[in-house]
Amino acid sequence: MGCGEFTCSKNALCAVNVVYMMVGLLLTGVAAWGKGFGIVSSIPIIGGVIAVGVFLLIIAIVGLVGAINHHQVMLFFYMVILFLVFIFQFGVSCSCLAMNKGQQKALLSSAWGIASNETRNTVEKNLNCCGFMNDTRNAEQFKMDYTLCGAPCKRNGSHCETCGDKMLAHADEALKIMGGVGLFFSFTEHHTELEGTEVDMNSPDLCAHKTWEPQFYI
Image: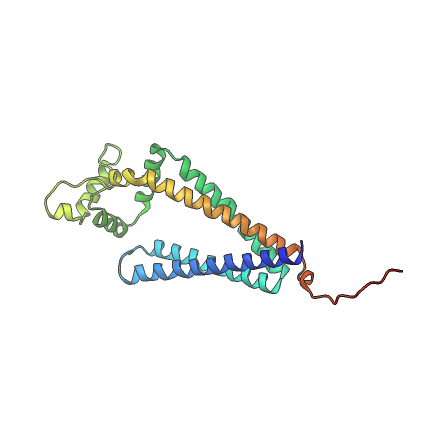
């Protein structure tokens, strides 16, 4: 690798990590803003988003410092972590794209079952629905959810759709978007990992200025 290629890889790695830092700060700020204004009331959701933002921010700082100072140990751990994130994100994205209606229903049912009453009430108010599924399997749970439901449709005395039907109506589109975005960022992370490998495996001495000495041939 020549001086120009080394400098290009180093600058590209720095630029990508600056973008990652901005995304990490944005995730943390949006989560705190959503909690402060009461848009999202679930503590686990807020904590998860903030944890992802802080993790991304730390990894970006490690990659940025390692690239600027050509710190090989930091770049090595940076590449290992990015590779693990790439494998995990690639698998999750492929699962999102391959999930059928039955699997979507089972996933939503599992998530609804472990959600707190506060989280369920927030979903019901936002989607204007009551309960998850009004079928034989979920009859008891639906009666309990309907009793605690505070959706506008129930207060107005009108017919309330189930939240499961409303979520399933948009789940396929949402999963495809999530899977596509996840695949895009997973390959971006893989490319960043390759850039980090190039910077780590090559010395910055390539760009050291050398004095030109004329040679005379007799």
